Image 1 (tube, rainbow, N blue to C red):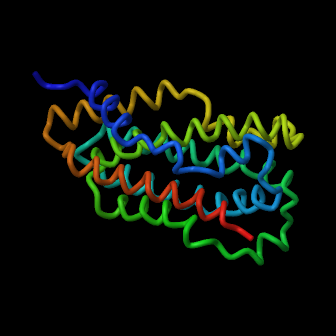
Image 2: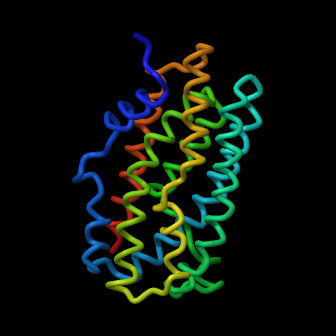
Image 3: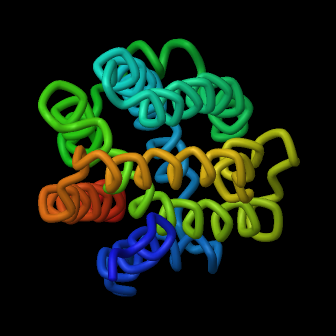
Length: 220
């Protein structure tokens, strides 16, 4: 019996769920034990990640000429990244980042591996395969953001506007989920979806995301 897109998303997300030990930094932030300098570096790195991912998603949407449901998914993702970029600025300001620090900052290779791979997917991968890989990866990211947003308020005294970046990614996105499901179902129906490749992409995304957090954890 053929699986539905919903079933495939559930099994892929469960299969690609990161090991609980893969991200030791978020529990540190949750306890209020991460330094404010680490939080500032997180903000600076995201200033590079967000615009890069947005451009990658726009390119995927443009490439998906025969996969309109995937194109709609990536167009919505790109719009979300633009909004996330706006929310990021109050967090950066609360971390004490000024223009001089922004200009002097050099991004860390371990943090930029994730957006670099998203860019690789935008150039090389099937859009529908990428929908499945990215949607499975988002589940872990949303949980991290929810934990961080709560701790920023409780342990670091950040105001709501400074937490909005993490609130944005932590909140449910039913319309985006619907578009992902529609894209994957269309891929199953038309044969555009290659589950094995999508799983490979998803495993690398999870590995690069773990590297992002581990790089921040190892800051002096």
